[in-house]
Image 1 (tube, rainbow, N blue to C red):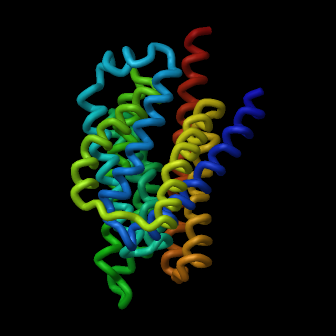
Image 2: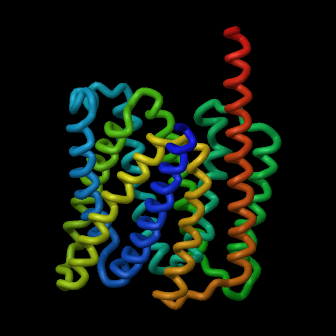
Image 3: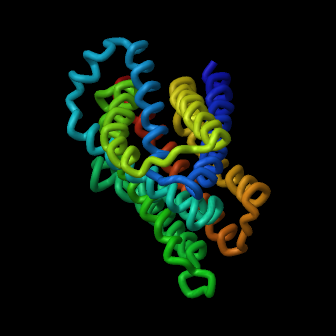
Length: 300
């Protein structure tokens, strides 16, 4: 049964990252014509509605939201994610989809590096070595000594760092709060922060772009639902590696739709980063299995 659940979770994860890749393409198109804050504001209104729906259907309802012992951290987490989405939106427009994601794939390595000081998790020398190799991959992608280096290449690196903080805070609040509670807080805080900015910079959209905006918002609901369900029906260690498929999907969309160029250094560097990230995931799984075996042995 576990194998069947892992298979289902994997299919859901692949579908989710495909939808997220499509969203990034739509975001790049809209970001070329409209203000970033306005676009992200509309997305967060939909996030909030979806979060409301999740909480209404969850055990405990809204009493579990207000009873959360992590309200301060939930607010901080919501602000951080709102900033990260805005940063990535700007990067899509100014750097491109492929280059942005080739740098952003470092976020799992940053999570691994920060999990020790922030969550108190043990990071062994093997994972530190993988993180170091990943840093080499990032330098290859950025190509700071090359003639095509752009300062915009540092923007997705900032986004990756901020997203890593968000991921760590999500794991921290997840020790006591359900995914529905965390999702609602994310939507609520982001909507509150971005609505004044989004309305201030608002400009009317054309009917076609309004349809694209509607697709962006609706697909966001489906993508996040698939992501949540994937982690619910399967082991996280089994489905997490498939997140890297988003880079493949993004490359396809970037080349075929936006005419982006797949540079050799981006391919080589991103491959190194992904390999290092997969190694850290494997080490985490091995360590978790060893700890579980040790607990079972102690109980017997």
